[in-house]
Image (cartoon, rainbow, N blue to C red; front, side, top):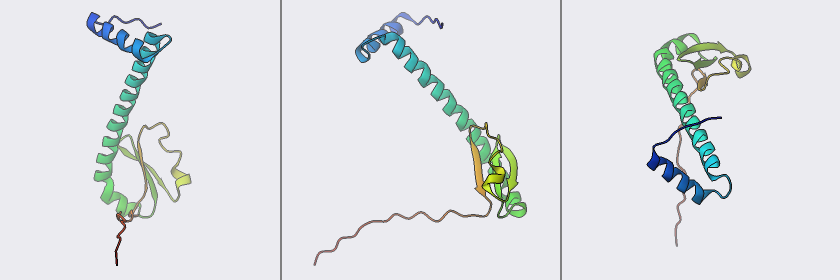
Length: 123
């Protein structure tokens, strides 16, 4: 069981708002929502940290990847190259617990994104 003491004004506001939003077990349900939201925020923060480290690693590794791994599939996780292979199946097992991974085929370029619109003409 988790016990926490909140400052009185915060506790009153919390309980009043919970009563407005929930019919049954209002405070308990609101507390569960609050903890789930906090945990989600922490997970997102960890993903952001790993993504930033992986992006920086990619920038540092880009020339080496293009020189030594052209056409290969690579995985960057935990801020470093985890491995390379000839197919996604060969590298799929690398860094399975990472919150964020860069998985790419070296040298492949994404097609340029274009916006398609409609033109209507009246005669």
